Length: 210
Image (cartoon, rainbow, N blue to C red; front, side, top):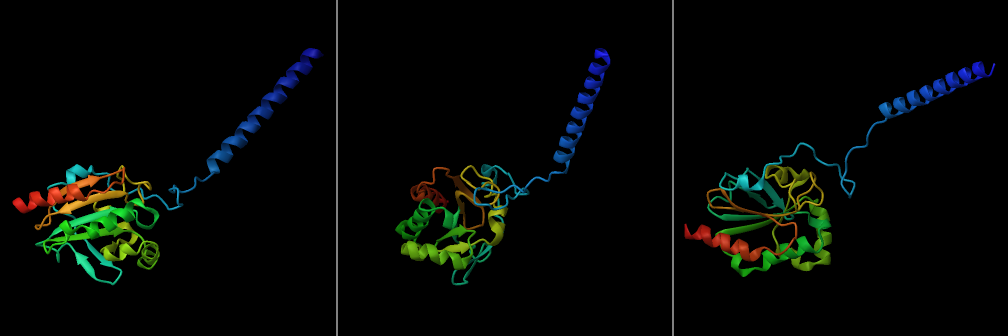
């Protein structure tokens, strides 16, 4: 009798465990994973290029057209014959490091010449950028251009750099120097987000010697 009871108990326990296992497997199978987002809740871009930045040096720069807050247009084609510095950065969310660099570029007399154009590239909406200017009025002196949906940042492979705190969705703190023929001559990505003016001046002097 006891043997029959023990066998029945074993059978019941086995069935219960099997049912629980099936329910758990079915729940995990039907569960949909949430889309990947960065720490600001922005969706991560998964189709961006992961091209090593040094491979872009001495290659023709991707074509671009960017607009400032006054709706003035800057394009690679229109800027032929000038050296171009592009500072790709996180913009509004990158205070104070990116803001300080933008101001430093705008105020540097060594970069104020007819042969060089300095553009600070942000992905913020133009209307939102006024908030930054209100907080740091010196930003109004800079030429800030707006990269809608990070299209140009993506073309330049700026969304997957070591400096990006929002990997795949926003640029971080990266400098691109393009010569008068539209060729990329210098790229520097800076996770430390320091002021890079001195090195840019050195690289510009190399171009002017050629």
